[in-house]
Amino acid sequence: MWWRRSSSEFRKAKGAENRKAFHRIVEKGPAPGILAYDGGVPVGWCAFAPRESYPRFEKSRTLQPLDDKPVWSVTCFFIRKGYRRQGLSAKLLEAAKKHVRKAGGRILEGYPMVPSAKAMPDTFAWTGMLGAFEKAGFDECARPGARAIVRIALKK
Image 1: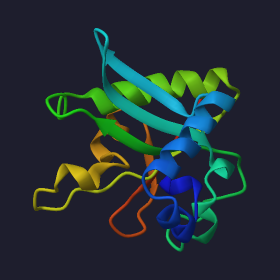
Image 2 (image 1 turned 60 degrees about the vertical axis):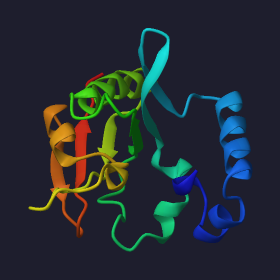
Image 3 (image 1 turned 90 degrees about the vertical axis):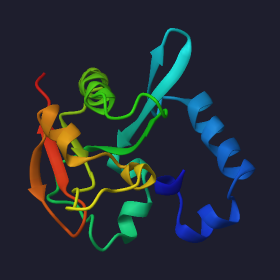
């Protein structure tokens, strides 16, 4: 819900209220992302939707639109401990590309962290890591700070 609400709205609704709001989004549809399973156990999540679904972008100083083309945005990952650093993010991105293409999207964009020389705690990688996007065929278009803006054109 962080991308879908202003800072003050997110803080006010922290916890149960944000979970309820997200549950309503899931129920209303379309699906706001995809899950990866190992058997019946959910082990990964990738959130994506048309960029306009995420009001937080409107006030972002660093993640302004690159152009006026309509894009879908990948905004969040969660990989269960024990499944990290095994390429699951790149696999989720491959599935996201197919889903977005099927939904009519033609450009998919992400905002991954660019790793520094020092190790980064997993909790800071929630928007993904640049290497996963590169592995999934995304190209870097800009680097406003610690994040890159990456894109891939989706074929019809």
